[in-house]
Image 1 (spheres, helix red, strand yellow):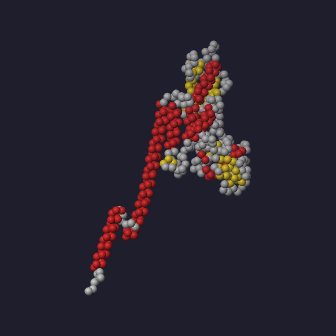
Image 2 (cartoon, rainbow, N blue to C red):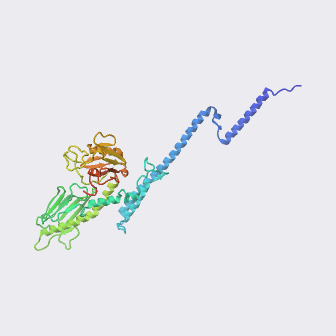
Length: 461
């Protein structure tokens, strides 16, 4: 008796059972893992789609993270900008509504509030998200602005706002404390008084704008002339009680103030008045002397009150507004017809040129922000200058080094250096005398804000 082997039908049935068992295993794995397959080969014809889809999912996740980070930055920036608006409102309200009583430091509550809010504002501008400064543009690792203390008080190498404001105030008040106005002493004549600006074209101090008079018998001349002046001559006639002299001045910030002086027979003489001579016999020249003294007092008071305030406003504009600058009288002048300029300065090249020579010679150097420009006799290339080149050529070389977006200029014998990054501006020379002849007050030349105007010191005229 023979035993037959497992037939074909039995083999097929076993294979089907094994397939079903594998499918059951695969389905159980899919159910527990949530994945169709544990490898790409198990995806079959969908393998390529799975690979591409995973890459897209990765990109979407990256975009989602970026959007989240950007939203965080936008929300922080929005909050910061809103706080700046609140700071402005706080300072304005404090200045308008608080008492003007001074504390032991000579400051009002409003001034203390403004100082505190300024520190807050600087802190807002230096806001960080992660380790990136929010308002620094592409320079994410650099503080947006300097520390509040450095801005106000300065550093060992840079002047702060307090220094600039004090220098501006000194320049506006002048040596006599009368806003750079000069009251003629002695009087031009016994019956007249005269007031004039100290220097023609000076940007500092009080500027005489207009004069009006109801003084009986008096003659008013001006304002006119260079420097501007006006005079009042009583012509030997006493004014009537209540007659008035009014003088209007323009302040450095563009505002105007007016002095009114009224002739008076009252004793004592009221504030804002001048005494009409009542001696026997009447002497109008004494009245003119009284008017002269009253002008002295009134101008001095105006200079030490309204002028000081306007000077501080202008100093703030000069310091914080990069589009503004304060200048003094140019060392030399190239305005008007091109004629030879006397004196061996770098601005006195032979007419009609503005040659650098005389001054710099071959071998001299000027170093700008670490880059050295060398003077040669001729054939200058790259960071070289011919000693016979123009000052404008030198300015163009300096601009190329500083990378300013606004070219530096020469006008009226003064050089204005514009720089987008004033904090880094540093100019030195192996020939300090020649550099000084360009109008630079000192070496190294630095600036706290662009543009830097040279030609004379801002604190003098």
